[in-house]
Image (cartoon, rainbow, N blue to C red; front, side, top):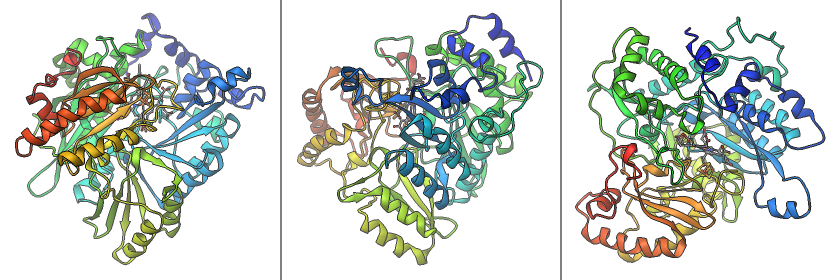
Amino acid sequence: MSNNHLLSTNSAPHSDVEEIKRRTNYLRGNLEEALKDPITGAITEDENRLMKFHGSYMQDDRDLRNERNKQKLEPAYQFMLRVRAAGGVVTSEQWLAMDSVARKYGGDTIRLTTRQSFQLHGVIKWNLKKTIREVNDAMLSTLAACGDVNRNVMCNPNPYQSEVHEQVFEWATKISNHLDPQTRAYHEIWLDGEKVADSQEGVEQEPIYGLVYLPRKFKIGIAVPPSNDVDVYSQDLGLIAIVDNENKLQGFNVIVGGGMGMSHGDPKTYPQIAKSIGFCRPEQVIDVAEKIVTIQRDYGDRAVRKHARFKYTIDDRGLEWFKDELTNRLGWKLDEAKPFSFDHNGDRYGWVKGSNGKWHYTLFIQNGRIKDEEGLQLFTGLREIAKLHISDFRLTPNQNLIIGNVSTQKKKKLEELLHTYGMTDGSYYTALRRNSMACVALPTCGLAMAESERYLPSLIEKVEPMLKEIGLLEEDIVVRMTGCPNGCARPMLAELAFIGKAPGKYNMYLGGGFRGERLNKLYKENIGEAEILDSLRPILARYAKERNPGEHFGDFTIRAGYVKETTDGMNFHA
Ligand code: SRM
Ligand code: SF4
């Protein structure tokens, strides 16, 4: 392995996070002691940085901040825990384990994320170890769910839709396993594994990442056309499955340098669409992924974290430079990219029969939130389904859930349970709601500037009468909201998006591609609900009247001149 990254980071300027990584001896640091400290429910900022690699963030309940401050109490510290499974596929037993930890430690709710993971919120420090152990007992993991490493590898969640889906899912799992951190720190800290002797230099504990890991998070997603449910253009490394006429997997088109995060008013930061660099055969894909990760490891910006994502490494040096570097490291050249086409970046709801003869039902889960409420008992209902052990569970990239692999004989039983607990494929909701996605934001996300998950449903409720009046209730329009410009619900790829600016205020974006292939553009800045509704009404009304056959909303808003087309992330702000 090249030691470039170690040499360069020792001498080059680097951020405080790089220092923390270097000091903590392959993710060990003082976490064990910090977890035992009985005086405070918090950990230090340094430990929190390290904790992310273990899949957890310290947060505080922002709804309680002012009140606790007035009472001179420390903030209500708690931890978010992210649990990952490549492609989001888990068994009934694993679902029951997640349900159990959510009931014991996570406030009776589970959050399905935009990257096919689970999140628990509100876990207190003294319960963290127990929670992580129980998650691991179920053969799930929190390691590398966050932190400067490769994150959960996304993939179409229905391996049995066709043989190709099954193979692609297997490749997603292999890539994920190959890029997992190798340090024993996780086992030592959370699972009481045997301690490995200190080994700062010399013994290689991380053959791919090295001592200081990556400069920033790294994300991989695999799409199976015609579905772009994984939003492949948003990934640092996107793979697009190419299938021949006999429905056999030929390999993958490789696209690089996507990403969503930006800061308001800072044009040096921008979302970007991944760009095509060629094609590789299935058996080459792990090598390709590894070499790409090592290029980012060695050349990513370790001084300025805002500029450290892979998209900037590529944009700064150029795609040709990147292709040459990749060819050098691989020792061979990618082939020409092959043709493909996408039709949508959403999920398909309801029943589908798979190539294995079993049934798969996609449930609509608003913003990924699983909890019990009046008339819709998702938390209890899904537990009851899991208890039957007649299915598995697949988290989709749009925060929904597939109950998968149900035999024809058991389908009726499942339908009864769905009905009893009020669960649905969303068909009685409007198409706008079915195509909506919001990030978590308040009260747990420390970076939220405005509400998102708690607000988008009620905003949609106010748009729905308008849609009814103008005849667009069944029109698929992709709408997304986030509480800040980090882009966790990939709003920059939505046809209509709202990105939080301040409490109750959003920037409104139009013109994203229906297939997730084009970034949107700012239409109005810093507007509240009344202005959002006033702005939307005439645009929707014109769309209903003036659209061409089959024309999607995002395309129309560009043709009608509401916004200019964004052709590349670098002109996102223009
Ligand atoms: Fe995210 C940070 C939630 C997907 C871009 N994200 C956060 C944190 C951890 C806030 C923090 O750093 O303190 C949020 C925790 C909120 C909470 O209370 O739960 C958070 N991100 C989420 C989730 C749960 C949103 C959701 O509603 O589902 C998603 C978890 C994914 C997972 O399972 O791994 C989530 N985050 C994304 C995505 C979408 C994706 O990956 O497909 C993006 C945009 C794609 C990208 O990375 O470019 C995304 N999250 C960010 C960023 C901006 C990164 C950047 O390049 O600037 C941050 C902030 C950061 O890293 O400094 C962030
Ligand atoms: Fe938090 Fe912003 Fe991500 Fe929403 S987009 S979860 S507000 S970091």
